[in-house]
Amino acid sequence: MSKQLLIETQIFKPSVLNLTEGKKSSNGNPIIEGILATAEIKNGNGRYYKKDLWEREIDKYMTSVKQRRACGELDHPESSIINLKNVSHNITDIWWDGDNIMGKLEILPTPSGNIVRALIDSGITIGVSSRGMGSLKEVDGLLRVQEDFDLLCWDIVSTPSNPDSWMQPMSNNTMNVGLNESLNVSQNRSYSKVNSIITEILCSHGSCPIW
Image (cartoon, rainbow, N blue to C red; front, side, top):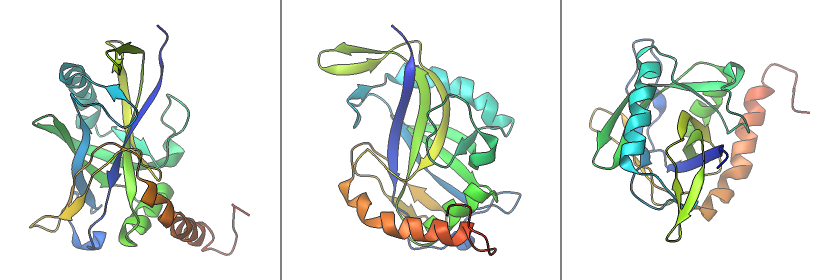
């Protein structure tokens, strides 16, 4: 079986808190945390990841986390290469909570990171999405991800495809993100506001590269 690009998206529903009020990294960058993925369930794309498969890939990915190179992009490129020009965040920690993969994301002061900050501060719902390469096999109506799966990164995206995920303020003002998988049709209502915010950021210095 040939490998293909596998993308699984989780919804982030930001709290009403401004990122400037939340937890910060040692560099002063805002931190959000929550569920990155859930094992042993059928996700919104009809795919199924075994827990031991995720455990293997998380163990490998922790090397990148410890070396501060667990970066992700804003929006999913159709590529297995992480484009540093589009990096918006860095994952600083990953751990398990039952079958949920938990993680902390540091929002970076890059052009893409600044867009993410503006979206969250404006109450826009965003998604966090895993990107990997692997093959699928249908078994009993499930598309099971096979042992050749390689996790690449987690990206921040505007079009979530998975259900019932929430971001809530924690007692220390950190954003606590709950993530799950399925198509969220109501997300479309925010697209015009997303476009307005992105246009304002990119065109704030007198020239507009998107026109």
